[in-house]
Image (cartoon, rainbow, N blue to C red):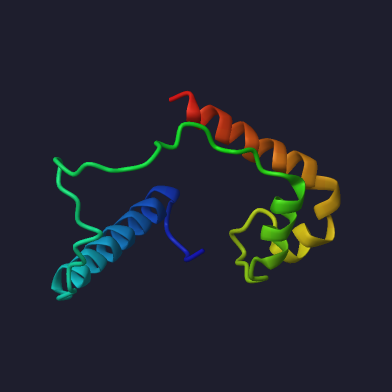
Length: 111
C-alpha cells in the first residue's frame, strides 16, 4: 500500500484513482468505432423464440473440479486463496464449493 498520512487520505486517493480509471475506460470505449452486429442489438419489440430458461441444472463435483483445474494458475496478493493452494486442497473443499454454487443457482431461480 502506498504511504499516506491517514486512512482517510488513502481511501480518497484510491477513490480518485478508480474514478479516473473508469472515466478513461469509458472514453476509450466511446471513441472506438466498432461495427454493430444486428444479432446482438435487440429492441424492446424483439420476440425471442424457444423455451425460456426457468431452472438451472445443478453443478456436479466433477464439473466444478474440471473448471477449477482448467483455470489459469495466475493469482495476485489480493486473492483470498491462490489457485495453486486451492488445487492442493481441492478434494477437501470441493463438496463445499459445489454446495455454494448450487445454492446460488437455486436462489437465483427464486428471484
